[in-house]
Image (cartoon, rainbow, N blue to C red):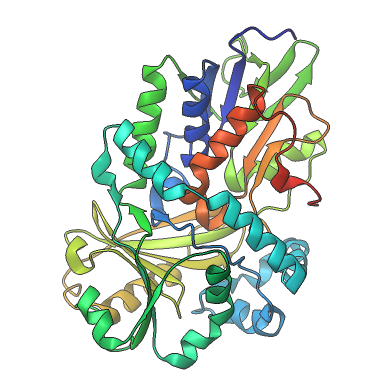
Length: 416
């Protein structure tokens, strides 16, 4: 299909990554339709912790994971839990996860993550201002807490990697913790403070602001569930089963459907290693001032965030697929830990949420041209760092489609 000066593009998936891509393409003159089965920002982008964390260069799979993984997966109250009935389906992904923990792989992946994260803080600060929502950008650093020196030592490899990539941080003792966050309970005696890191205090509103700006520039939003992508001589057809007469042919299609990408791409012969790491949060309305910045209970892999709507306590990883309903025990665990760690929450009944983080075994997102499928682009697998990497991802996809950086993204070369 001959492309006009303004190529017609469908972006499938309206989370923070897809919405960022639609906005970036619209700014550069493309004719873009953003498609999602739900309201933009209602998926994983609604309930995440809003962290902008360029210091997250350590992949989830680190050396030594093999010995500790079985115990973590089988502990129903651990930060990483596997539903045993889902093990046969998860096993191929888990084997690749373990393989990616080899030291050489970790070093390579850390370098790629550092390059992908570069400039994230400045980009998000600038975008919130451009969208007219600067109040959503909070830069007071991230405080990582540990019960004692022994617990901190377990994360030593990750902090060494951060040092290698120029991430600056300070170690603080109990007095230093209280100087930053007076409400932290006595369990936590040592911490690491990353002073320049930031937080989006309402990720859903951030996505909504992006989409409003996109529509204001002439972009189209379509509420539909995409069921199939097919390529013909006249371009790509997006089939959603709702309007057979709609003009659904595009020069380019960007898949940004997160944990659901595998089902959409498999019929095209594209096998992506993506697994849902189901994350939970509980939110205590009216308790935002319990902390003044993102606080990470590092021993429990829990993020505590002063969101616009209250204190959000989120985290844990549950590997149980896309179909199973939320498990109340996981939310109850977060609620209990929050009450144990911070005073003043006993009288508040929190709201509860569960979402699907789209995770790859090596922690690297898949960003760039789909191999062997001209006009098809992938922006998936951002895992725990969708907010951090959304803008850089949008720039790379827009560059590729509009000819500034044609072809596959270098982060994808030599990847399975």
